[in-house]
Image 1: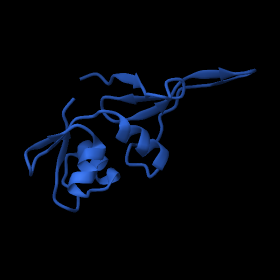
Image 2 (image 1 turned 180 degrees about the vertical axis):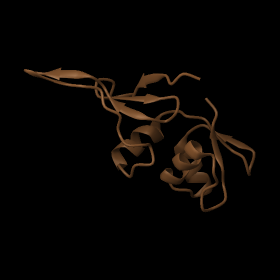
Image 3 (image 1 turned 90 degrees about the horizontal axis):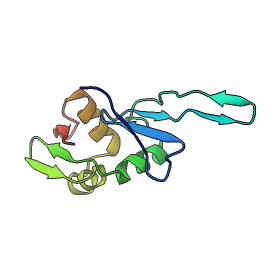
Image 4 (image 1 turned 90 degrees about the vertical axis):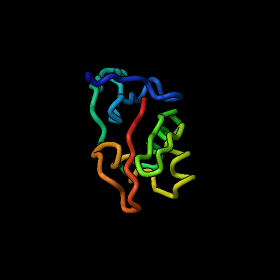
Length: 107
């Protein structure tokens, strides 16, 4: 499957998020210099601003152990008491987090 990029709500001119969970800056020009598109560190970064942006985005997440589909990362975090970075890591690698849950991105 090809990686598809979409603008981050409220930050359309700054960031894009892919269907694989990667985040990158948008190519833009300021005064006399240009900023090229760069890939930001993987989603498991501890940047609270980035985590908050992605938590607000509606990403359906399926928990293998409970058999439940959640409407957002925030819903998973609030229901199962799992930190965001553990959820992102589990979705990216397919391995269970420390609490034993394995998450799969549905959409």
